[in-house]
Image 1 (spheres, rainbow, N blue to C red):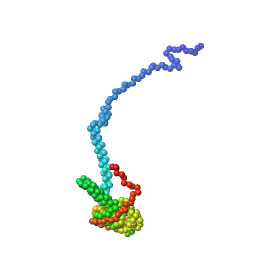
Image 2: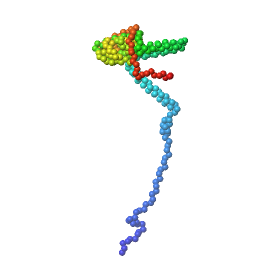
Image 3: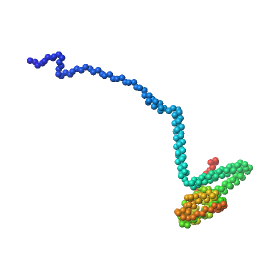
Image 4: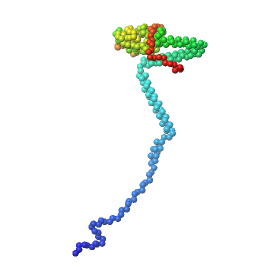
Length: 278
């Protein structure tokens, strides 16, 4: 007998999988239309400057630049704001003196021009002016004697503590105050090339040794020269201070003669430059 059992309708074999109906795809929802963002549009339109706003921005930028420049100028003037009253007075005196000197030079040059223009003998007038200029340059170069108002400053250094630097500072202070001719101890004429060297006890000036008392004679506006010497922290204060311990005497003179002459040396290398017009 056979164990095979006939297939029964409606029954499935154990190894068969059930048949599923095909799945229907789920429809995707349609995208919603974008709504315009009115707030964002307004914000963007606000960042687009109008012509008036651009002009205002340029004006503000210029005002800012001017403010920065003014601040820098004020900072540059802080040095004068913090200066002592005596220092400011000395600065003003120096500026006033330089102004007067320049005005005098301008007036002198204009007078020379007018003289040459109106003179019948222009060659003779030119020679006279050249000779006057030579005399002026001779005084500045120390090759000619000079006379005029000025000061005589006597410096006593009993302990021999003065140095060439102290004496050079005194000369520079007098020059800044308008000294036109200076001599030391009646024997040394001070010019642009004068050198100062320490040679204890004393100071060697242009190769000549000077000892205390040091007598400085200078021609110029006597009051300005005396003020420069007596200025706090200046020559007199330095000599009479504890570092040197000396004495100083300043005398204003209505007439002072400077007779010491400077012997110019021949230049080894420097030569007059040719005129640019030739």
